[in-house]
Image 1: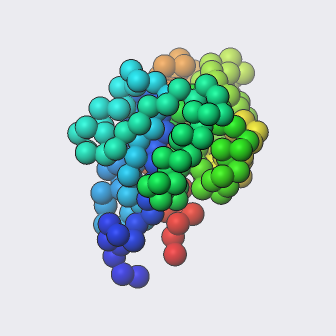
Image 2: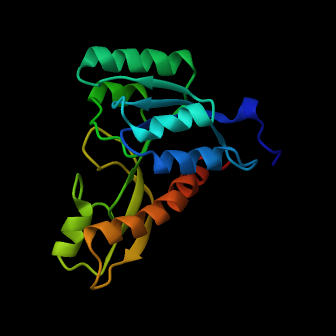
Length: 192
């Protein structure tokens, strides 16, 4: 297979709400020769998101939208279509997208979630895993559909929970795996 160049890599947008550690990991991945993606846009629902600093550092276009209603989602959709975005990666994005938005990009939206889905959809996944005395937790990359954290699973990574783990220590262990799992999921679905 010929090496991918910037012109034939898949134009990707990353949606964030917070610190952007998965965004940073995806940007680094996108710079590799073997990577099938190029990150063209960073979108956030939070103008104070620390992750927006990566837009400046890596010279990537950034946009902030409130995602409060269908009108703001239409603006996002127009922005993505204008830039020919063909893949959306949700990375710590804390808003639920509408059915119509998801339909517009069916099969082109991925999400990373900090649990072994279908277990512990939504928030507070580390607390739930510890409270229920699970031996393992982990992370999942899945396609986004109209139901919360219910899309087809692409891949998962298990993380052992030890008796001294707190939600904070478990979150750290899982985040390390997320940074490896997301690029692997992208390679899996986009490998030719």
